[in-house]
Figure (cartoon, rainbow, N blue to C red):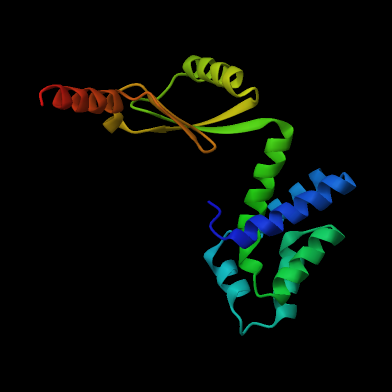
Length: 179
């Protein structure tokens, strides 16, 4: 989850540069590699330590991050100068979101009361693809408290077709009718 607005700005700038130069795939690879390097708590603590020398941080990222392109490396240097290397995972996540939007891919979270079968999942993906006009990638979660039905989140859109929600709505209507 992206929490720092600066990460969104850095990601947007990187995306614009990558798009302009036709290097989206390279940036995607580089940012994902750098974010993976910072996946451990220890690595994040190291790059976030203001007392650690900047050169040591860059050397650590260079060795662990692999073959990072020159423009992505410029981003690393800029973030290092501003003591913002900890933003790299959020920048990579937002960059991937922008790239997926450009590619016409929608990430959908689906909450159900019971596990969905493969056929149900495929049918839902087809239906949501028709609704969004995009290729859909579904991530499923199970929560028995919704009783039945499903809750779908597509970006900022929420479609609540759960039995629990319908029962609560019915309860409110009945309570209003008796007054």
